[in-house]
Length: 416
Image 1 (cartoon, rainbow, N blue to C red):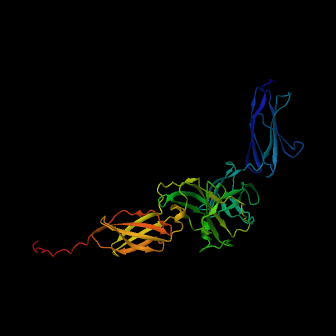
Image 2 (cartoon, helix red, strand yellow):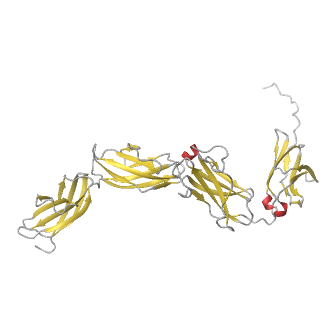
Image 3 (cartoon, rainbow, N blue to C red):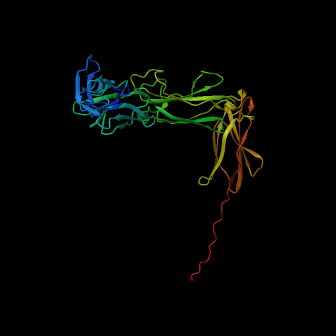
């Protein structure tokens, strides 16, 4: 027999958890070929099963597998009176009916986790049963879901938790194989974004909170240490003081998905953090998981002429006949001498004329007054305290249209 004669390409494919199909090929020339197949449990020391197969056979089906075990296979071939040549396969698992379970998506806002698994396309399979559990929830006796497909989405899960996922693929009433996924972390927050606000003196943050957590959101204003419901917090850190995180406000309801941080120092850089927590989750501990979102450092523009007032705006209401003036007092921009403000003065100029004081009193951020029509008005706001007055800020002129006289009656011809 030539040296090239050999058993090649031995493969094993499970058609069911109890049935495996072997296939192979032979190289070289054979005289009066004889072939045999041996099978055994991988844990056994000796080959338990021996089968003689037809000389022309290139495959063999074995139906004595026991699910949950691994098997070894051997195919032998020889010419009449010659030596045996073998091909081997070791450690083939009988649960190859079910491939790996993988997580294909986890959406923090909706609370959806999607999984897929591989099924042997040759096997006759029934339903797949799925389980999902977190650290505070034991596995349920019955499956959380049943499907005939090879994928599933768990919907509306609480965020801020670690999950285990399990799929069991049945091939008979009592026969099945299992696969468990790695731990899956589902955050409670997603998509933190930022933008400058209030003439680039503040930062507006927006984010998406987990739907389940919004449904159990704490209501009103929280105490320093809430004990139930879901709450969020906003923090900032000045790059000049690393690690000096400052809580911007108290705990805010989990339904809140935006927050504007004011009072930031011009010329400084800040990064921001939003955190959410479910106070009813029994296994949560401080620092247990990273349930926070962070922005990069954001540079606050340095003001060449610090504005003690920002967002000054005048609007005329035709219905009320009033001019409404609004602004924001920025004590942080006025210098240490000007902090705090003791009062505000508001001046008005009509048609570009002289400035007339229309208000002087306690610090406020809104003024409404009746004005005559047919003129244009500008406003100036000047904060002050015992040390003096801060640089004032002027609004753009606002024109108030003159009231039109009533239309004179006109004759209407009766002729068509």
